[in-house]
Amino acid sequence: MKHLVAPDGCYIVVRRRLWRIASPDLEEDEKSKLVKQLMATRRAVRNAKASADLDAQRAAHRAVEDAKCALASGAPVWWKDGPPDLNRYMAKNTPYAEWYAAIARSRHKEV
Image 1 (tube, rainbow, N blue to C red):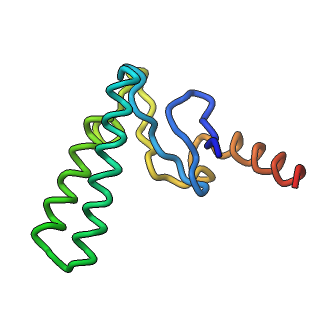
Image 2: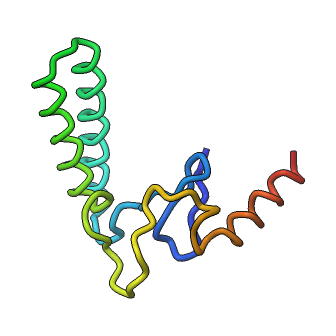
């Protein structure tokens, strides 16, 4: 399933929440490598939690943050035109609210 992409291309919407997309300046191969790295680090967090290893959890969380920063989804925003960072905000509580409500209404009619 494809996620909704905000009209300006800065965010996708997942479960009604905005998530900043990776920097479009990344080459596709590099982006793919970094996404795989991020997924691996998230699995490491899960495994560390399951084993109750606090040191491993801390290290895995740091690795997740490093991977997110490399993708520029956890770093300062990659756009230069000034809008604030709305990463993880509910779409309905942002300047995207009207756009999102219209999409949600049209999808509801299709069901």
